[in-house]
Image (cartoon, rainbow, N blue to C red; front, side, top):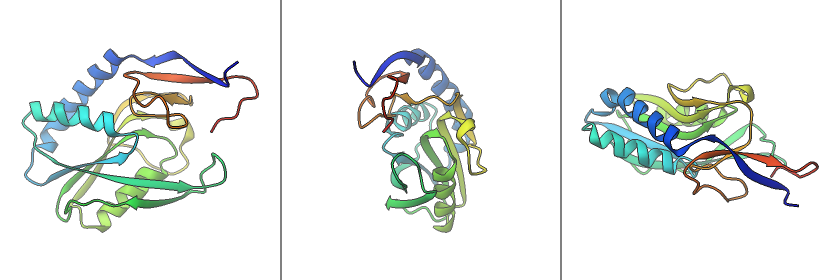
Length: 185
């Protein structure tokens, strides 16, 4: 028997598409300025960011786009609470209105770190947009400005989220079910 399976679809491709269309309308006014930068947190945000940017384009927005990579160090699957930037922005963000886009808001540490780091670089404003918010796992006081869906404390994959570098390509979000005794990586 496999140590896990991906059968339980939490959010369908259609549900995700509809909610992204709604988010685009919520974001459109604030993303149409002359100095707007959307920054995706790699790797999980790439699908979400791409769909947001295409939707914003249809609304007349022409933001600059960049990515950062952040890592959290810990033993096994537990974070130590320390976040480190391993790929910084290449775009000039001093004076810019920045929207940080991420796949999931979990503990709050990563997005809080990103927000503070970008403000230190001189961003005029830094707002956040996440596809999924999992408040049950929050350890740092942080709330995203824009949220696609709030979900329960389940291990999920698809639409950019992975398990052991697999399942990012799924066009939907599914719950990972682990066999009894199977380790979560």
